[in-house]
Image (cartoon, rainbow, N blue to C red; front, side, top):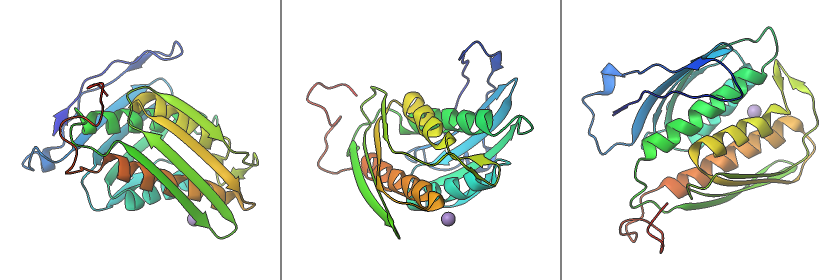
Length: 225
Ligand SMILES: [Mn+2]
């Protein structure tokens, strides 16, 4: 169980991040890759508790219903336990809330992952959802890079602006240190398109973060990830 204190300065926002602990889980074994991270800005307050070696238990309340649905999918299909609470300036729009959850989730995955020893490193997944086909490829490289080869119609699903999908995953990639490529090969139903992206990301991430018995130390000839 890691306890984190971080200070972020992004885009000139006045931010402070608070240290947190998760008392109920402190007795769990240290071999479990888990973390709790909170971050507060003038725009949002986000807390993420994450167990990468969980069983898909999700408890998500962000104030953005469609994002709650997507993060629950991420938890279930990523085999991770994910608890998210967010309070954001939704009277403006969902932008700050969705992006800041991406930032905290990315940092949480990075911190829960720790030294990356023994992980498979790469993940790739195609997910079909009815008429939609999505591919997500990722590398836990430590070198953040984001490619979003997708055209999602800019509409609202509840209070979620669909263009926030790209912003969310960019925030995750940049703050986790992932090389992340997302492609929507084709599709027409916007809900399906975004849901398939989250499911493919979940499965690709789970494959990359899985411990691989063949990997001794780091999965890198360079010796650094
Ligand atoms: Mn759905």
